[in-house]
Image (cartoon, rainbow, N blue to C red; front, side, top):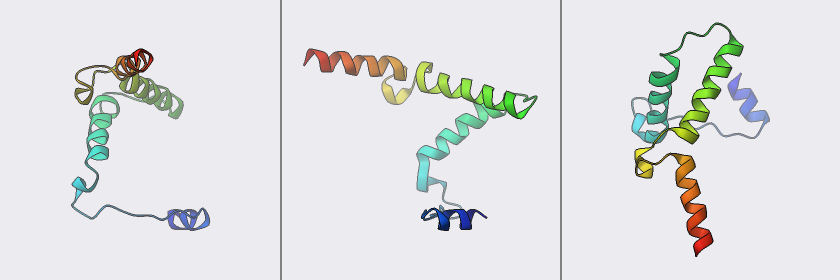
Length: 89
C-alpha cells in the first residue's frame, strides 16, 4: 500500500540500511527523545488525546526546551537573538 501511494505520488522510497541507524543519526536521536519524553511517559485515553499530548510536546520541544546544539538556549530565544543580530547589522 505504501509502495502504491509512493508510485502514484511520484515519491521515491529510500529506506535506511538494516542495522545502520547511523544513516540518519538526527532522526534516530529525535525518535529516541520523542519515545522517552512523550510516548513512554504518557497514557493516551483516545486518539484525540494522543494528538493533543503529542502536539503539546512538539511545541515544547520546538519552542521552550533548551537544546545543547544551540548552546543551551531554547529555539525561541536563539531565533530572537538571530533577529536582533540581523537588525543591528
